[in-house]
Image 1 (cartoon, rainbow, N blue to C red):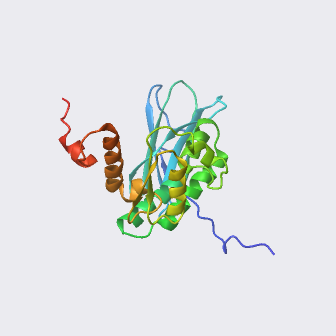
Image 2: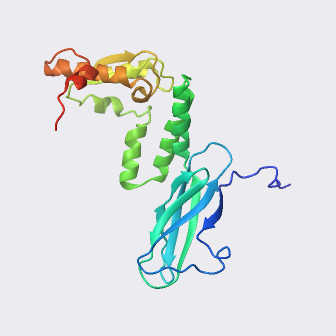
Image 3: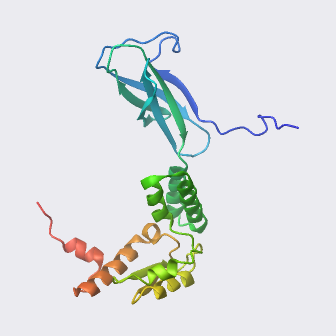
Length: 244
């Protein structure tokens, strides 16, 4: 027995009230060569997901569609532009979809501002990055792999860390529930001469959750290696002369 669509509705992005249009697109609009055409539309969906939209266009005879990102104007209205480069008939359409990562990031920022536990949310973000890595290629895949990190079960990781010969500070969130402090200590122990520091009240992403203490730790570590004073990174930045 098949499931009726009304029982499992799709979370569809709605695009309507596209302009300019003559008789709902039944007749073409007219513009001169060189004119910049601004296309607007109401774009929305249920929920709080972040949307992205693209204006796609092509001249009759061209095989490929070109696209231009649209920007949010106000309320549900979005706008994008393209230029009439030659005489002929042009066709344009709009594509809109949910931006999964930006939706996650917006939700994370709200949770952080509300002082909520970020453990679960950070795990979701890491899963999104690793899932995107599987679909990416080339430089994009390399960058995503760097953001997501290798599998924690990587048997060769400890051996590679043993080859690190630069001064190293490993900073770990004390409340990290994705990879506990014991894992961080093991990484530090595998790096010759590395120091290990726990950040209180911090989970898996110190750079987001407690950036100021993280900067101070890193700054103090760098100063100790450079033989400069013990002032915090924020104090040093405040004393730095402005360049004009």
